[in-house]
Image 1 (cartoon, one colour):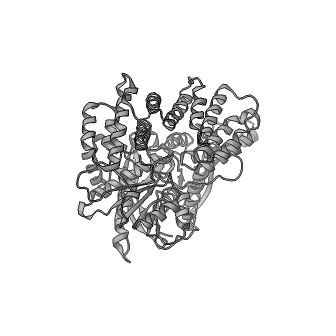
Image 2 (image 1 turned 180 degrees about the vertical axis):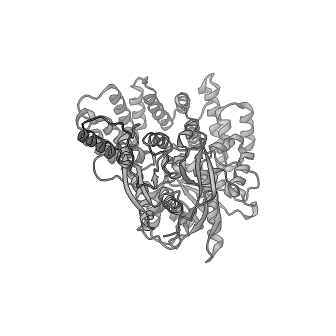
Image 3 (image 1 turned 90 degrees about the horizontal axis):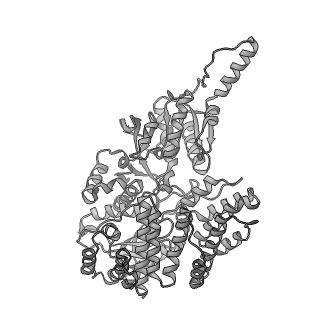
Length: 633
């Protein structure tokens, strides 16, 4: 991988360039490209900390873990202290990580002590002392716990490349991959190794195949590094790549070459000229989300006739600031910018001073924030889906709702959006109850929302008044027309059966698309649930069906792994085309994430399809399309 933050794809290439293989990031499980948020006031929340970390908001996650450590003084809080230090390191704030580690209390457990030593080695590396960090790691015995082994091997891999030991780095990755059970995680691990080898060869590190000994797996990786680096420099490595494939037809990197390998040219080596700039974190913690989104965008790009494709350059926002990336793209002649991705990056892009080309940001600013001129916003927003659920329920003639939502920032945002839309359009939200999503038993919040405990209390009072035992079946409150139950798929599959057990199985229940994860046997538990989703996920006809057919032709069964972020990237490219050619005319695009339009605030609104689980399978409703997410705004 080039050390320069920006890369380009030659639009004039006539050969068929494979798009990048996707990773289905469970971390974005809450809503694909949700807004990343800061810590909430009040006591620390472990689910909130974990969610922030998964979504890449490492500073906010670190602060949340620090609050948890404060709430659990003494040795009980050491795990939270160590987690906070990890997040500060991920946020590239080593001074904060060092400060937090000083808070470790008492005598740490063996597991905590090992993690502490790993973090100290990472701090040494962050201070630029890679050789000393390697020595610190070498002094440790490899742990037996699988999770600790993965952390140890991941750091060993990084340190090996930082100290000029590529063979050791490859061996560490091979050992770590054996511990990974998720295919997407294995693929990401290979991508990271591929990038490290290409970067090491590019800066002159000798990748000696003989260092692999008799291990063909390690030898294959070491031989591939110089080939990839040469391809990146001059694009003339096709014969060498073909020869490598012939020597290693079953090597795990062979599939990686098929899905990922293109020959980008560093943007610094390209002359200034009109191009489309794509700002994505193609390395770092958010790389998995960016890879899937980028693959979808490139699918749209390469679907264009060759002679109509604009030059395309991809800038890595994980290795440079948003302002610097925007300035570089502007100086290089960008006519349009797609990205950035995270909410913090989008805020920075909106605040960036100076002249800039039109921007299609891949997240939303806060609702109260006015976007600058030429600044468009596109996101897979759970709040918009909550508004759709409110309008759908009212259109179905249901006006009295009770909401059950997960605790935390996501649940609060979705509930507030539903409440505002539902009550603003004449509905009545009778009650809203939050529950801890990391528990398996939701009986108490369900009984509270349905007022089953009131029914039991009335029964006890009546028995007391009559002085006898009466046959009894609790009755839920009778004034409800519907339930609003947004939740991630795993939580929804536990919540729905418990609602049926508590006499609410006959109530219409509305959710967001987060409830649906394709191909799971557990979807049987979601019977009757109503939810909106994009045509790409529901197998609808039209553009989604055509894209799925084209993707299947190229990748076969692999198309099943291309989820919402793939569709999001594809539609981002369609929106660029529509915005570029629209002039003052309204933008209306029949996309794979929905039917897209742009409102007066330059926010993209999605008109989704509605489905209901029947027999464990989502079935499109008659007249499936909802009112647009822009309606009633």
